[in-house]
Image (cartoon, rainbow, N blue to C red; front, side, top):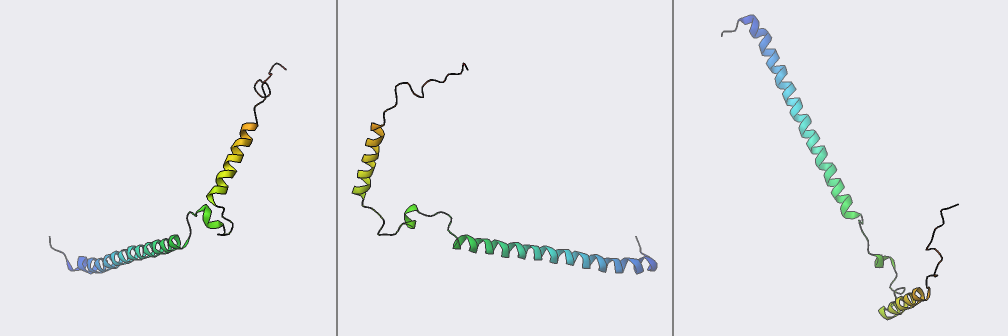
Amino acid sequence: MSLKSIELQIAIPKTFEAGKIAEQKQQQSQIAQQHANTSTEKQALKNQETVVESDPYAKLNPDDRQPDEQSGQQKKEKQEEEAQRVKHPFKGSFVDCSG
């Protein structure tokens, strides 16, 4: 298949245009990749600096913390109070729907 001179006049500029377009697409993909990398790095830095989950004890001052003995006594007192609250024999156990 031989090309005539007229065909070469059209074909050669078209190859240059196609090469330029291919180069532009490649540059665009590189730019998009760089943008994705920078946003990922920013997100990683943000995640490192922010607190995801905190200890409930971290909010208390060291002076406000109670010894374990006192908290154990408080738990026992709460259990005793709950035990003293005896359920009423018939209140709340029957619902009258015949109204």
